[in-house]
Image 1 (cartoon, one colour):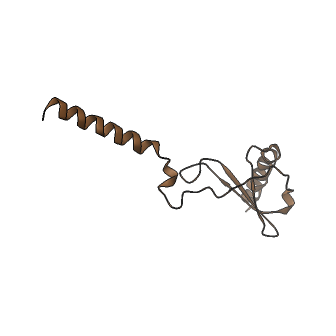
Image 2 (cartoon, helix red, strand yellow):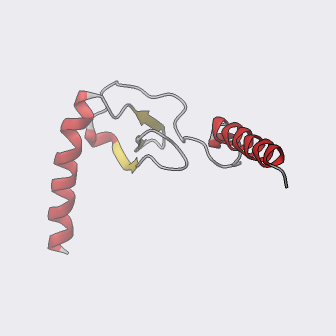
Image 3 (tube, one colour):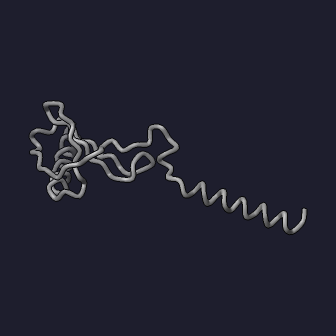
Amino acid sequence: MTLRTNLLLAATAVCCFTALLAFPMDGFATNNKCRCITTTKSVIPPRLFKRIEILPQGANCREIEIVITKKNNQVVCIDPRATWIKNVLPKLMKSHRKVKESI
């Protein structure tokens, strides 16, 4: 192969890789979606919690998600930056550890 052919092949490869990396990877997978479309900062009293899920950021979603299922089975997504949830989570985790240790 000539030098010109090699340069043309290299330029084509660079263009292909650049185009491939420019696409968001969320568009290629079918189930790559965040569970929470909207979030709220509204305070929900812990006595109404039936279940709380903390979903870390990863391949499925680029945001940390906090999903609370209330006792009436209503599902609410909480903004992880809300100040009240930052105060409630350590207390819940501490009480959960105490319950786990007593078992």
